[in-house]
Length: 113
Image (cartoon, rainbow, N blue to C red; front, top):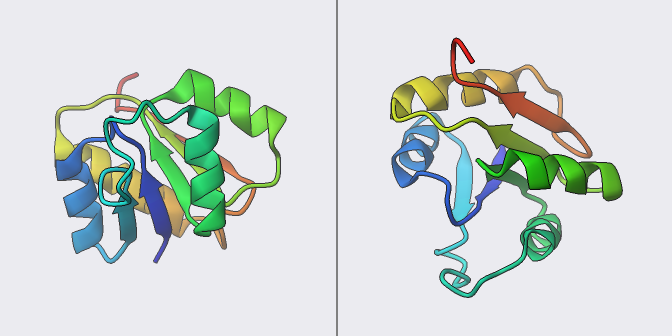
């Protein structure tokens, strides 16, 4: 399964559900970087150092970073969804479709969006 790095705003219930599906997820808080005002660039750099794809709701900024920094361990941008399982399943399915996540931008939108 995938090695992921969830940024500060990513919902913990989705992280926990993805973990139950076998994904290795480190949250920004678990990495000791919570409430520090870490920039998006620093989030992506740390994820790359850890060989983890970023998991984020911050679509606009991370799509921009993907365009600027093509060499990364992957970026998964998601739309906000309060149905935690309903958000986790499409993320899981999108990851399974890929051989690896390196340098890829994966968009996972809430159904109907």
